[in-house]
Structures are given as structure tokens and as C-alpha cells.
Length: 185
Image (cartoon, rainbow, N blue to C red; front, side, top):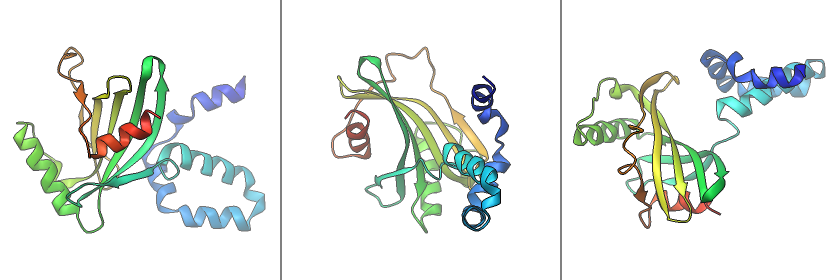
């Protein structure tokens, strides 16, 4: 019972600072785990937390955007009843493309008449999507933008009352189609 309680509350104990520390010190943690067997409990807990919550074990490279600015990664896929799959994805700039990545996001937001405040500091963003595998449609449930240090800049949750406008057909020959193929196997 105690183990279940600890596991269920694990995410509450992990701070952004801890995630950043683990992410920056992966090589040191691996060195400690290999060379200091007495640190077994520390190693198991740290590696478990690193894999589960920092994203270092979850991200699977999906592909690069056609304009060669953004890299897409799948963080997780959950299959639900009724042919629905939920996907968490992360989008990062390609090496050396951070200014173009930021510019593209700002221009896209301006076209949609959304605020661009703070987006000159964006480092990556995450989205939670649902795919209707039977209808070959998707909908964005949430999009969150972060700076390079993992601090949230903006969370764009679509209006839940706007049911008619949120589902879109999966366009052919795009990252969305590749992701649909992985989510709806």
C-alpha cells in the first residue's frame, strides 16, 4: 500500500529544478551508478524519475519539418476505446535554427491574431493531440510553449465548447500523417 501511495505521488515531488538538474547531469549520474554500487537506491530512483519525467527516455524522433526548421518527437501514445489515440508531442528547433523557429512561431501567431508576448524567448513546445483512427482526423487538446530552460511561456488550451471546429482531417504527406500512422497502428 505504501509503495502504491509513493508511486502515485511521485509526480508531485518532482520540481522543474530537479528535472533540469537531472537533464544537465545525465553523464555524471550514469558515472555514479556504474562506479559506486553503494548508491544503488539513489541510482534507481534518479534514473526512474529521469526517464519518467524529464523526457530523456521518452522522446522518439518523428521527423523534420519540410522547411528544415523544426524537429518533431513523440513523447507518448495512449490508445483509448473507440479508435481514439492520444499523443503527446514535442517540437524543437533544429541545431542552429532557433531564430528561424521563433520567427516562424511569432508569424503563425500573428496570422491567427494571437498574442506574441514572450515568444521571442520560446525554446520548444509541446502538444497533446487526439487522433480518431477510424475517421482519420485529429484535434489539438492543448499546446504549451516553453523557454530554453523549461519555464512555461504560454499555455493555449482550445475552447472546450468549440466541438465543431476542433477536429481536422489529417493532411497527406505531412508530419501529422506520419504521427497518425504511429498513433493508429
